[in-house]
Image (tube, rainbow, N blue to C red):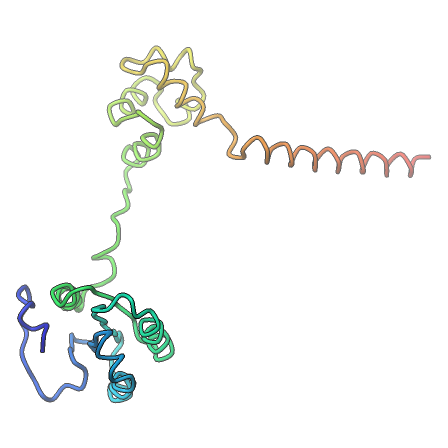
Length: 213
């Protein structure tokens, strides 16, 4: 087994009783290289049949040792899709081993363990929004909150009021004010919407005029 010598961060044991190449609780993995599949195209299909549906997550771990053989990669992708396997590609045996270690390390853990942590406090959320404006930093956000008291107050502030805040210069004020007040639609799209709306209004007026006459 070419991967075992690279698995160092989790405990493993060898067993002849398991059907897949690797078993990690409710997850299993079959390992194959591109060159091997090219020489033995029926091997992986037989192994998939042997595994059956005894695992909640079934992985087809592919060592890409021949990047030029796109036809074989496409074939493995089709096999994985048709047999409800998750295809994972790696470009070295060490990388393949890291994937196995990761699946083993997260065995039994919920999805929240790898999900991005979402802020629930107001200030971090506001900071995340306003720092998307070029050159606006966390200190600026705190200053704006101290001066205007709320996000609504910041939005209602004029450029003349914003520029009075310590550390916020003219360029930063213009970018911030433009970001808070400029319509989301670009000028071309706004023009199209205006033409449609005007056309609709004129048609309605014409129809109303015809009815009155």
